[in-house]
Image (cartoon, rainbow, N blue to C red; front, top):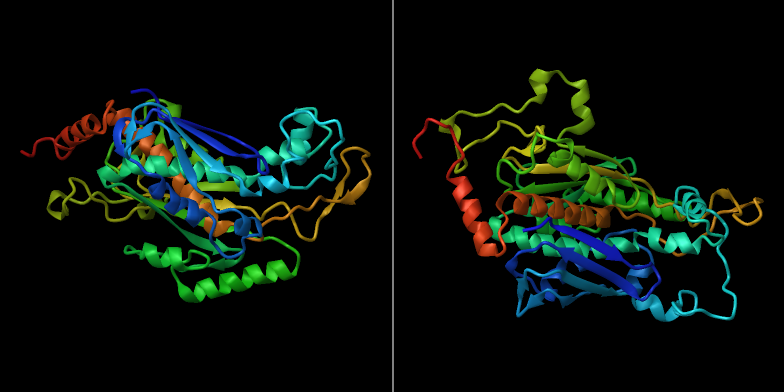
Length: 392
């Protein structure tokens, strides 16, 4: 098996988004209906803009699957942009004689300025179309493919909203009701906190502003030993931070207790290893999970916990002062239809990136050309873990 990887292509107002997932073994159950669940979840959440009423995202499988099972060949997915009919002239692929209106008012906090300078462009639309978070629809489609591989191994990936603005939810607890979280307008487990989060979003909308927050992704069922300590790029902690940190507008990623652990004594930080008489169906258990399931760049058998901070959206209804790209004169920043808050949806995108990292790690350690081969390797490995001198 080769490396599991994915690529996306497409612009925010182009014809659609293309996704290629390469390295999936044959025999993995996968349908468009399965992918649709997360595509729909990404479009939800209080504070989303008008684009979500236009689009009804569906990932169409173009290749790599036959009769509900992957073939082992590259999987191609297509997500149509239903708003294309309103943009086919502006975003036309073929040359046009008539000039197109340029976007030149730069937005602070977006890719506008850096992108136009890097790629020598005089129209911000050349940058903003690909820099747009519309690309995350492609990532969620990809994440569904990764989940399809994780499912047979009992690995589940969920998320919830921790904060929106200054409103913070109480600790999640050990038994989360994920269905109830998804039913919440802000994907928060606590109803009273959810009401205050909604109020904070409303206040931002009324002020012509946007608001950010923090989401947490929790993956359960990953075995001990994914990733490695032997090289920097094989550490699973680094891969998770890179994957989640690559999501649009993410400005901070932490694993487990994260930054809070820096202010605590080691005796309160490190997760005590419980003796064999405390097993509970698993060969190793911990008294806590401050490490977020990762030690030395490897999974340790506990839940993998990744938390990310997403800044407020850069496109403000009440634009900030800025500069015109063409003239250098002071102007108000460009405004184009946008969201007020994307924290609930960002959690779903975070799930997709974590799922991809874990799926790649599973194939790196147990990979075969067919799911059955991968499963045999996985089960054989489980027979080897546990105290070395205890007869199993």
